[in-house]
Image (cartoon, rainbow, N blue to C red; front, side, top):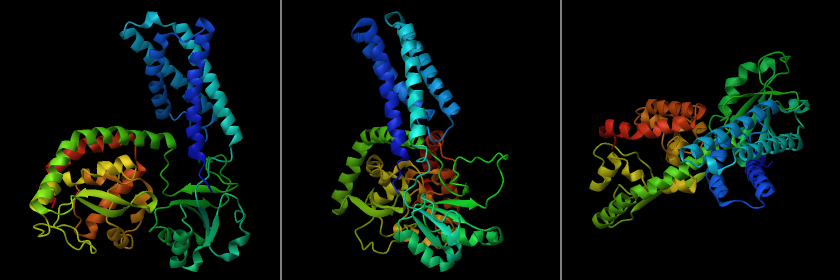
Length: 437
């Protein structure tokens, strides 16, 4: 089943921008018969402000919020845009060049057009808000085939967990399941740890369908309800498209700046590697990315050319390291080529660090919920790295702590949290430079 929700929200945002431009243009043509040049300047400045405010306040998330909530958000977007633009034009002494009444009228018109767009999308696509790709309903056994959700259209397949852990896990992988909704009867609640353990090795979203209960008067939100079922979120990263877009735009902007700034250093490192060792400059290795999808991660080669079919973490006084390799690993300069991974979209500037595939295969069977760290895009640095878990993890306890920090980051993510991690990364790098090999 296609995930069309993000497309609808993206399209809604585009319509918001077009309605904003249309409102200004139609009123200018009504008054002047054309668009005066000074108003082009106004549009150039105000359009990014309007877009960023809308993204920050998630004005296009029409499926996530109530009608009143969306109306309030759209009103605040218009108010902030008008306030900022009034301040800018006043400070630049351009306020007399613009008709404040005309601008106010255009923003008011944009508000009502956007409100109409939001209502139309909520009405036309009201059943699309909970669509996910490849959703599985997990029931106790085949005797549950008469379950009231068995034939529900939101589910692509039905899996029975009494068929064994290996069978269920194989089904999840072979059918590329990205979300599971599992149901337990009241008498089976003691099996919840067993059921969750089945999903612990895969980067999938997990929802627990609660038994039918009369909770209409409770504070529980029913926005994710499916038919009469109440899905309780177990591990879903509850971020909408505008937040993810903001993160992506941040990656593209700061990634581009970093690429320009570090290019001379990268060229120097590449030259030294080539002259002193004659081997390849870059080391490419497969890593798991978002939802476990593999990608090639770039690094400067820091070791002598050797058979890398068996991956062993670098350790103190490792004979495989070249002299320049020791320096760039200590300072993490060997990670700079991953800026290309960020710009390609395989990685983010901030997120859980991607481990070698063989390490993932090993630790996913040793650490519960290990693969849940791949529910987000991996990063060049992360919360674990600024918390003292940078570099090698010699024992499983250290890896467990790293995973605990990664999952905390996923569950508490925000743009502000990312900026904090980026700010603290060089400080942590200098502080713990002796611990890195």
